[in-house]
Length: 489
Image 1 (cartoon, helix red, strand yellow):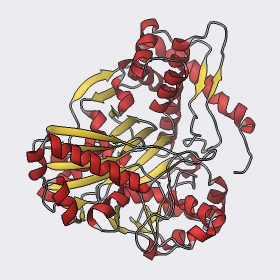
Image 2: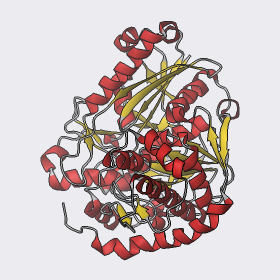
Image 3: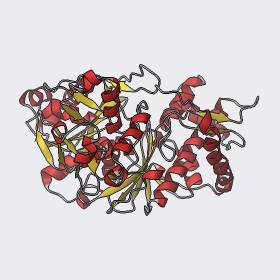
Image 4: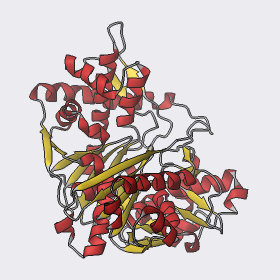
């Protein structure tokens, strides 16, 4: 038995699989998000541990024999979050999350302080990354910065609670801006640019390497042995492991709260000027390129709530009953700012083309199309970085909609393979990494593609229409850029 624990933004998910990778049980535990000021996004680190403990305890109650036979645990989690600990390993403030946009000025300051930062990290400094968050704390809350003894990523705070170890994996650490991604090690120059040293960093591991064992009291409470906990991966790399996206050229679209276009490779291929992320993959000698939409399925949740739909599924049914593309209506899906390709945390969501005939279904359809157009932007910059894109799999909560799949496939002009069980994504990937560590099996044996549920093919009737509307969509952000707020927070 292998356990994958995925720390997301809205919930912690615990997934237990057997040696044949059959899912025995899956238990989520919800999390609360705090936005105390404009552009801010925070969570209480201790709420992560309470949720993780509740999720695994739920598994224990459902399948006690499964937990009793547990052999290893893998961790996955939301990337980039700054979890600041004092010398007693206690959080000194709420964790600043991946979708926090307060540190734009600090991004510019970091690139001035380390002029070759893009060459070292392979990435443009963005407010979502961890390093600018520390500079913001240093500038605005120096009394807190003086107390920082250790910085952990979100999933690694769970590891600390589980094992007592300060450790992380290279895929997650790549999103801090403190890693020399080509060399797969911490960069002392990038740390110095933030007023930090190596002593503040956890130990680096490859994804399938064990980092420690469960504490005795945790193992007793969960009804298992003191099994090894492996390094794991950031949520996107873990989702790719779960979907079998490990060979060069294999790709993944994740339709979760955020959206990700992920391409696996065997070389470091950065394109920081267009806000492409070039990170280490969760396996040794593998890298990946990634474009990120800060809002994807969350846009559908928002429009469903804003228009009084019963839920997202009901709105999708309403859109599908009409099933015709928007003719004039365009939507910019920048509800949490924008990352790839514009890197603008102050960008906002926009509807263009409203009239007296616009109703809930039309707004919903425009939202689905707007996210699809954003994925087209994401693909364009990946190709410009030198990525070779072959087969594309789709996972995530938004992956349940065949209608949305047909829209995205028509915009991209390529078929998309929807994977059965893909919604388990990162948690399954974390469990697979634990299996690699415990059994010594090869990635080719363990990290196989999930079975196809269905293939979303481009609709010939939509391809030409969307090509014209994509051109109009791409003209919208440059026309509005100067109208987004420029006030300093």
